[in-house]
Image 1: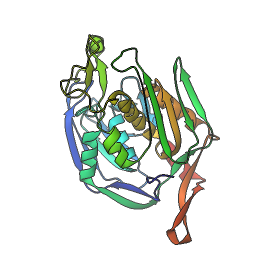
Image 2: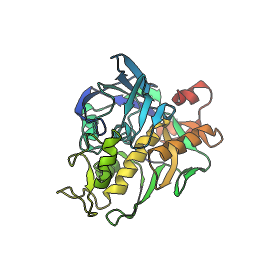
Image 3: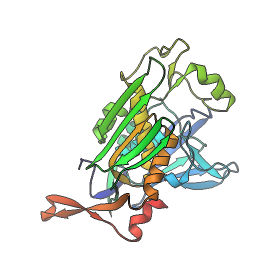
Image 4: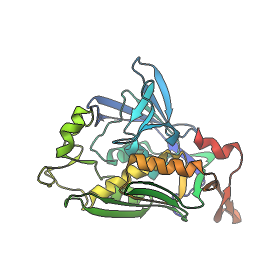
Length: 316
């Protein structure tokens, strides 16, 4: 079923910190990543306008906004924005439990990719806990559509993502990327893909209060002449669709448990990803919650269905 389908939950061994600016706020922000107990999941500790600490769980039920980035929590009390790159990394590196302290409203964009988060979490190391890891196994197709865009889940013996984008510009055009998710593949083929945007949209975004921290140091920018402005060019020939894959991983990590199945999207984005995940979790006939169970003195394993309260822990 894939090398990341392991028996037990994990967390990190030691605390690490990262600092930068928010891509939308343009303000300095620092975060601390710390170990967390089993069955905690990923929890953000963020401050409201009065400096009060609020706990926000990384669950799709907490998604407040999901257009240009994924925002968790209630913006009027305590919320945290642009969580997708960190969440993708946590998911791909098989880290189940993590506490995140943040001193601003938005995670730092760093270099626009997940690579700095990979480096930080590798530095922290991983610790295996004694609690069993749970998985959401897709049992039947689930699909959402919005205009020409769609996203869907299908049963699959592993964790697979297939993402396709289609932009009316020759620099991007139609690109597709698919993978069976694994930590090493993520490190080499997905993590370094950066966020991207168009110079023609900058003034509109600034006027709306977005992209105030965007720069050529953290974004791939396509100019008015439909050429990439960044001097170093692309990190991958198809960096655009790989970054959309990265975003999708981060949004799907908000299930609160790892999933066994195939996720496909066409011309997707944060909102569509969240809606597809909600559609799946709202239909209890579309999935089951399972754990691994060892047989033959640990030499083989099977997935068994989890019933009762433990099966619903990820739902908050």
